[in-house]
Picture 1 (tube, one colour):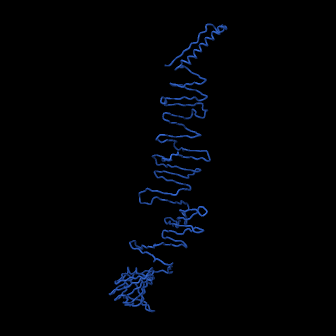
Picture 2: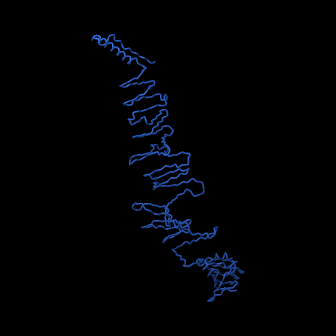
Picture 3: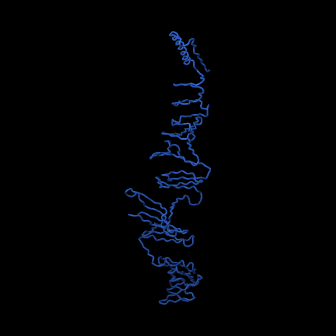
Length: 485
């Protein structure tokens, strides 16, 4: 219960100028007793006083167990006083104000709001010479929000030539740690993260409508053993794509437009180029652009570039290089039609180094002259089949007349040869018009050459003759047993 103490000063019965020494001593004793009583009451009986009016204290007010409300305004203070508020829910405004505008901490033109019940601090600038910590020891994430108005940048600035901005984590290695720059918005504008040097972009990660791209405007060095590009696309088109784009404003023939280099150290430990693959423009023009792919490799005391070239129409082995086929390798030809039949070019296992020279001429290679195999038949041969026997021996063993339809030869067939052996008991007849196109046939007998007419010549049993294509639609036949009908 609050106490109220009231004191009344004693009345003076005579004017002060009429006091003598005796009266003065008696008055002094009365006043001394009076103030002693006041002091005693303050020391022993003062509990919850009520002070009506202003209280001016030039010293220190100590209230270890202050209970209740301290109201009113402090107009000025040389040094700031402190007060502990134990009931933080009693007042949700929590006003704090400094008004002399001279202490460099806060003045009446600034904004400083702190709500201890929500832990919210609003201010315009924060300057710290130490560490500003945003820490949460609960399962919820610690959140540092930085806001801005439209068309205003958010800047982290350090006035230091050796400034380092770090996003560090603690030493806990049991969980996952991430630095995430995330923009969640409903518009279609560009959202990106940029690293700049002297105002120029060096590294940019952009998200434009869900399409994310990372752009490096400088060299990139990856100090690891693996560079992997992964695509999760379920379609059939080629993905992922590694694109080397030379964005030149002055494109010309022979421009090299991208390379993959294979580097290692030389004997002294210096970096060296050992091989490369690169593309080069060979034809340039609207709709007619062409290129080839070059392969280069290091050789003793130099670099051979290129050693091999792939064009859109050919594979080239460059000067003084060899195309080597290892064990059990061969060349296979599909032909003009893609089907289940191919022609393979192979060799018998050599027991020595061999050289085969092709003549300086055009024509058909005679397989019969290179091997011992022959075609043995007892029936007639159609022109489409006989053309495939070029360069071979054809042996007839039939007991009745057989016919060979001469193919319709063209200029590219010049030099093609056939060897016909009649080992049967009947004639082998040459049908000059069997292909549907008449062929001219000449018979060589000694020094004489006779042009056959429309009658088909033949080879009698036991005869052996050679048939040679001399020009388009022209043959010559010579040998034993040849008869012009």
